Length: 103
Image 1 (cartoon, rainbow, N blue to C red):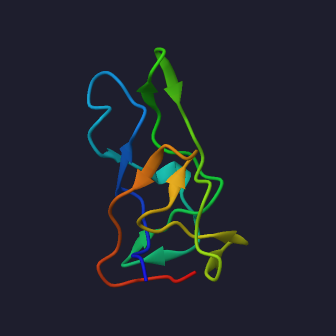
Image 2: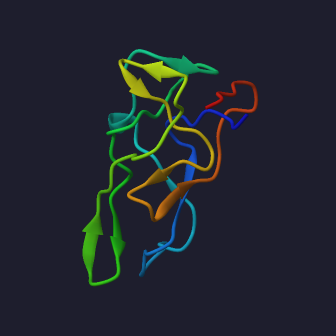
């Protein structure tokens, strides 16, 4: 089972260009579930935005989490885990060392 992703966990952008874009980026506290935590940190849920970052074409990428657990939900939305993605091009690469979610 993959680890649950939380605010501050890293995301790798596959289409980003420019300063720091091909390095892991951080999710933002404002774009997570406001009621459910893993290891004391709010979890990421489907429909929440990635940290804004430049992508090819000099525009901002503000993709929303588009995949998550089919079995574990928070506030009615699937929770994000390592391997889930934002818009098909930004993949979650870090998560909780103690909380996992299947499906």
